[in-house]
Length: 433
Image (tube, rainbow, N blue to C red; front, top):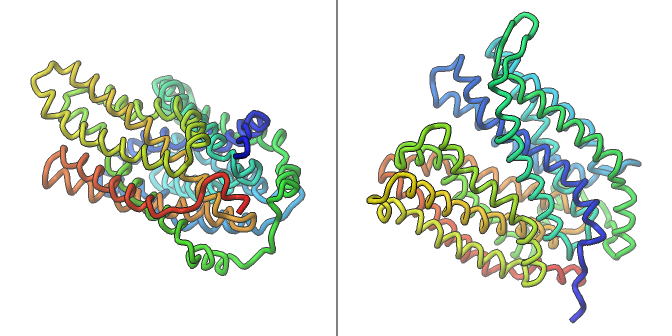
């Protein structure tokens, strides 16, 4: 057996590419936490606020696949993904930075900026993610994706733990006077713009694409987007379809649990609203710590095997969380909360293992001309889950109580585990064949 290569020579490149992912990890948690509060100043209906908050998911379903595939067909002197990155990410940053000011002005100004932000952010997400497989050899992409996911986790911690504290800082603005709940957004926007500048200066996309071509990953004839998409879904080997269905199921499980763990912490475990955010924070911390190790494990033991082991562990963790409420009912509140956090940290460890290695499996099935299409399909299925799952999970809670939420998630993780058995491609060595 040939000796497996190391990511050592690609760490700097991967880190720089990860700056694009860093920007998403920085903006998303601040957006999800504070935009509902901004909208709540004008809109009394929580359902209407929730409807507006699903705009990013709806746009993602349409924009990510289209722009990912479109970027496959672009050919400029700075590359095929970079033109989207240097135009759309700064636009998203500017819109993001002005959202709190729009919230001070009017509802329609706020909604307009929310639309511009989501339009630009979701359009650029696919090209940002597809940049890595363009520049890193196929057999190293699990480890590289681990580095990128770690940067996303660090950005989440930076946004929620550090920048979020500036929402309590008072500043003086023309026409508005002394206000707070503003500063975190423009500070995050500056980080995003700085990341784009560093990415553009130090990542030479065109040269890296040439280097990969010399390694045998040649550019193929560019086929029309719809024809390529038909080929992807119509392949005789259904591995790509099965992994897409698997990720739909595990994202349905994830998107059912995570939006409600804060409410579960307050209403069942009796925490304060400020402490409730630490439940999801445990998953984020585990994400940042274990993203790189999970890529290394898959590099050594195989992606499919690693994902299936992680899925089986997630099922066990979810069943334990289901039992947690009953088994700890006689314990003091602090011990109940700490053990719940510990379980969510374990959930995060195995969740990041699944996410880190599933994307490289899809990329391994792609060609140079279809990387963006596969990236878009990944986001289509994952974003579809984020629209489908929360209402179903909420209905399960209303009908059967909070414990049913974790059984609901465990069932979909089990379906994903079964579907993954049918995936026969996506390992590093498959590139040669």
